[in-house]
Length: 449
Image (tube, rainbow, N blue to C red; front, side, top):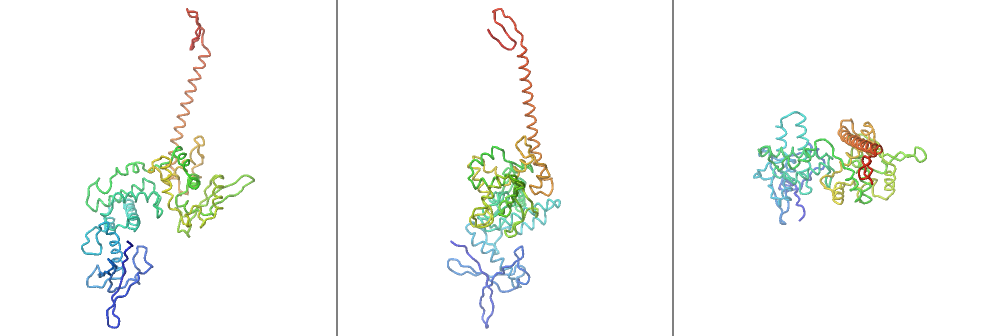
């Protein structure tokens, strides 16, 4: 069954007779979806739709006063609500256009909750950001979402929201939050749900136990181990190997990777046999993409990787995107591909996400050469990552320092063992001959006939 569409009509008097005429919905609206003032006129509006091959009608009223005619914005709202209801009746939802609708509407409850929210300015801002982000995502008519009421918030819905925050979904890119940040936002949505239905601490759609691992990780970034990286690269095909090699070597954000174009590859021969290979990361207005800081940067990559990218550039593609889809659009399926790779490599898919490659790259850049890293200085790493300050890099430094501590302790242990072995060899070489009653000769530490 196709989607049921709801249209707006207006009752007007023509030649002394009342008739209905269709009313087109203005294309241009404000950012919040409302009509501009010059578009929002009053009239005798009705909505109509087909049901069981019969045309149905419903009057539009002015929600503020029964004595006044409704505005076109009222008609648009009723039409959208009715269309949502008709296309979601299988979920046993309540018709929001009837007076009998007693459910708690998501938009109204969020507005009331935020208006009454106490705490410092930063806390209120964090709750406002999380709930606004959730509302924008959850009310879209995609993948079984399109919710309108608070009681439609479910545990699976919040899990999908968490996945979207970390790595996006099949239809669009997410904000690339680390799991700790994403879990915090999900818990804020649960706190809102708990407040609406007057539930006590520990109740709600979810509990902290559901996101214990993510919340305990705090802001310390998680990185892939060498064993995990080797296992994943071992099961990748050529295209996957190139994509994730670039993420690992260049430390790109997911959206930066998605919008790389041919012209972003920079390969200069400084002198015979000596090449400088870089990738330009910048905003792409034609793709409606802007870098996180709004600035551009050049990222160094190995010559071997650049050669593979140049071969990719030489291939015939629909658009200039290096990693576009078959129709030349940005590829939003990197998250799904990574999960599939993890399963093929016998790794837990819940422990891998795209942003983890960036954290691993940053750590490897700071890691000493003795540990197999690059040994780059902090300022250069900040530049490579595109951070505005050094604060975000402190967590990576802590990881590297712990690794170095482990290396020092291992070296000290090996030195101690070697010193002990050397002393034992010295004692053996200086052994004293002793004549035994049986006629045997013994050397301290040995026995022979």
